[in-house]
Length: 380
Ligand code: TRP
Image (cartoon, rainbow, N blue to C red; front, side):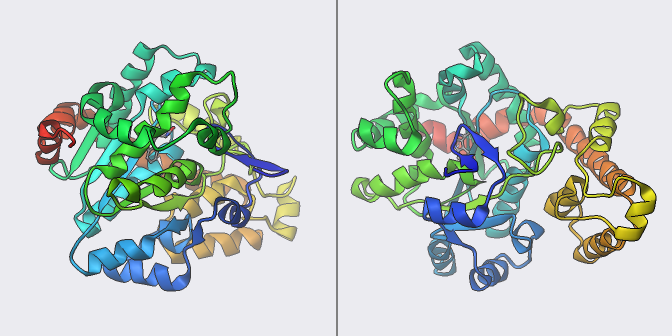
């Protein structure tokens, strides 16, 4: 990406200008009309939509055409199992579950243990990424997907059923093209140049339109998919893109494992969660007196931003927090405590469901209705 920020599938840095990303990637903003149509078809609104956290799309209008005409569509999303998951990772899965519930859609979830092994800078062994795939699957199952409409698979295991399609996709993509789209160079290992074919395959799992909820950094894969899908007799995939949950450390870049203080992990204990939020970047004034007098800036206050993104779904309550913060009636420390309680409650509930997920793993990966169908299937 240009000048002061970078967004690629491997790197997100700088202060992101999302309007310019839409232009640069050639996607479309979700305008009011499309938003209202989606909400009408879903039968309820979702704050990730109304607050424009999911802000960009490709062909979402065509997905709704297909749904309204009774043809339906399916959902596909994924996770690169490079380590433990944090709150920013799990939010798109909660949104995907909402879409599944509202549209009764099948969901395919790819765990890319191959991809995270091939990314050499990560220094992970294949055994590491395969183990993380299992760990991450539990967090994803904890989100509560419908076990008969969901198939979770890890690439190194499900590859037998993907390989024929991956080959057909790969033969349509030449090296100079992936080099341009993904920024590969002559030192990049050859596994990486084949990998995009693998990430494209699940978007071809059904002969109807696929909708991919994901963070905007994954869009380059869908660009490639859309260039080749029709020539193989499939639909171009649709996508709905999210912004990144801002790092606790300030409004720059995305949360990452190399900066553990920037994120809250789903397995973290209460003490460390409290401490991280307490140290979060704030939009307040240097002293309480000044804050009471001048007020704070919710636009850069990370605690408020997290409430806006996910943790305070109630618009009326959120508005009051914003106004009171601006007016200096709420101090930064108070905002952080409000967020802390919400995060702790969320994590506690998520973790209880993750415990239950251990008994359910086989359903999502092997024995559920959709899983069984997918293991029976060998692509033509
Ligand atoms: N490449 C993604 C990552 O590194 C994982 C992934 C695979 C994915 N398929 C996807 C993400 C589909 C979103 C949608 O995290």
